[in-house]
Length: 319
Length: 319
Image (cartoon, rainbow over all chains, first blue to last red; front, side, top):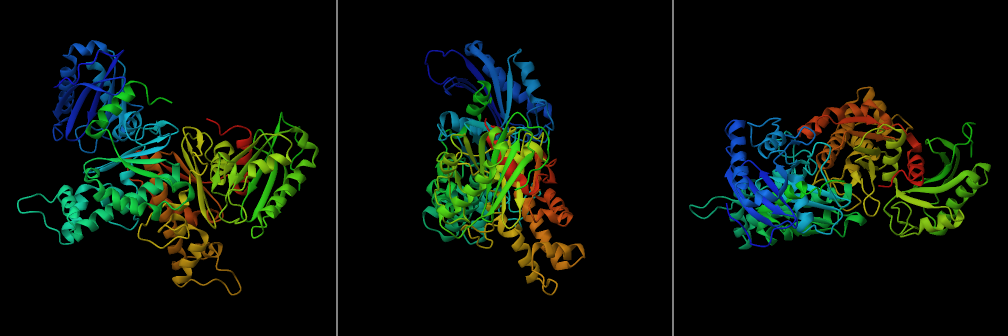
C-alpha cells in the first residue's frame, strides 16, 4: 500500500476495485482520475468463493485504514466477466468459486452504506481510456486489451456502452474465421484464439522459432525475435495483426468508431504488433465511412481497470 | 399511386422516400406507421445524377398532388448508402451518378421549406422494425435484410444507432472468414458474399444443383429445391445460415442484443434459412449473455424503408 502524491484533497474521492483472476487491486481515486492510494492482493482464484471475498475485504480494509477514506463518497468495481449488472453479481471465467456471486452486495456490506457501482472489466477499460486516455474526446471508440486474453469495451455517442447485462464489448470472442480452430468458449476462429499472447508464441514455435535457452516461449520473446527479423516471429505477429484488423473493421462497420485503442501486454510489443495491424486494417476496413479509423496504443496501462471503476463510481457512465 | 384505407386523417402526416438502386418509393405515412398514399418510379441508376433526381421529383410530385399533402409536416428519406448525415449527402454504391450528392437539400427545394431528415437504409430498416415490427419493445436489436445484398441497422438502448455518418449497422461487410473469398468491397469473407441470394444460388450450382429447364438459378429456386431435400440446395442454405449465425453472434458479443430480426427476399425462404441459422447460432453465440438471443423474421416487409424514413421524419430517431 503506497500513497501517491501529496496534492491537496479534492472535493471527493472514490474507492475503486479491479478484480481479475490474478490480482485484486484497489485504489482511492480523485475526480480527475488520479490514484491517491493503492492496495493489492493476489486472487486466490482456485479457492472457494468466501476466500476470494476475504481477499477483496482485505483490500478494502487497507483502503479504509487510510485517513483519506473519510472523503470517499462511493465505490466502483470493475470485474472480470461475465457480470450481471442488474443483479450486481459476477461469474468470472477464471474464478470458479464465484458463480452468480453477489459481489455488489458483499462489498456494500463492507463499506457502510456507500453507493456501490459494478461494471464489467471491458466497460472499465473503455471508461478509463475515454476519461483520461487515448479515447479522450472521442464520441465513438473501441478500447481493447490484447494480453493473455483479448477483451474490450465500447464508447458510443460519448458514453460507455455496457449493454443490458454489462458485458458489451466482448471483441475477443467474435469469430473472424468461422471454420477456424475451436476456442475454449465453444465457438471457432475467435479473435482471442488468433491474437492472444500464448497463440502468438505457439504459432511462432510451430513455424520454427525457438526461445533462448532457459527462456520462456512468451509473446514478449517472440516480439524480440520479430524485431530481430526472425521470419516465424514476424509472421506470427502479422497473423495476430490481421485478426485484430478484421475484428476492428467489423466494429467500425457495425457501430462506427473514430479510434481503436489497444492496450495490454501484447500491445506493449509496440510496432511489432501495430505495424502489421495498421497494414492489414485497410484490407478489411474498406467501407468509405471506416477508412479514417485510427489505431493507437492505450494510455492508462495496468491502472485501466481501477480508473474505469472509479469513473463508474463517479457516475461518469450514466446515460 | 394508390390510396390505402379511408380512416379519418390523423393529427399529421409525413412524406417518406425509400431510395435504392432499383426503385424510388414514396409514401405519405401517418403517426402510427400506416401508409396512406404511395408513389413509385424505377431508379434510372445508370443515368446521370440529374436524371435520378428527376425521378425522385416525380415521386414527390405524385405525393404533392394529393389533398393529403396539406397535412404533411416533414419529409424523411431513407437512402442506399453510404450516406453522410452531416452533409445531407448520399453516394449509393448502385447509383454511380450520385457521389456526395446533396439529396437532402435537393428534396428540400421541392417541398417548400418542410424539414427533411436523411438516414441510411440500414437505420431505416431498424427504425421500422423497432416502431411497428418484430423489434417493437426491444431495447437492443439487430435488424437485417438478406436479399441481393446483406444490410442492417441497430437499435441500442431503445434508439436507432446511426453512427456519426449514418452508416452504422453494415453487417453485410464484416468478415467472418478473414482468409475467404474476395468481396467487391475489397475485403475477404464478408457475410454478404456468403449469405446473399446470388451466393446461395452459385454455391448450389457449384455442388450439382440445377434449376428447372427455362427457370432462373435464383435463391428462390434453391429454396424450393432445399424444401424438396436436394442436398446441394440444403447445404448452400446451411452455409448461409452459418455465416449469418457467426455475424449475429458477433453483434451480440459486441453490443448485447435481445433479438435479431431478418427480412428480405432470402429470408422469405422461411425455415429453409431460419432452421440452419438457429441451429448454427449456439455454435457461435457461446457467451452466457448471448445465449438467450432470439432470431425472428421481419414484419415490415418491402415497406421497411418507407416506414423507417417516416419514423425519422417524425423525430423518432432522435436521442
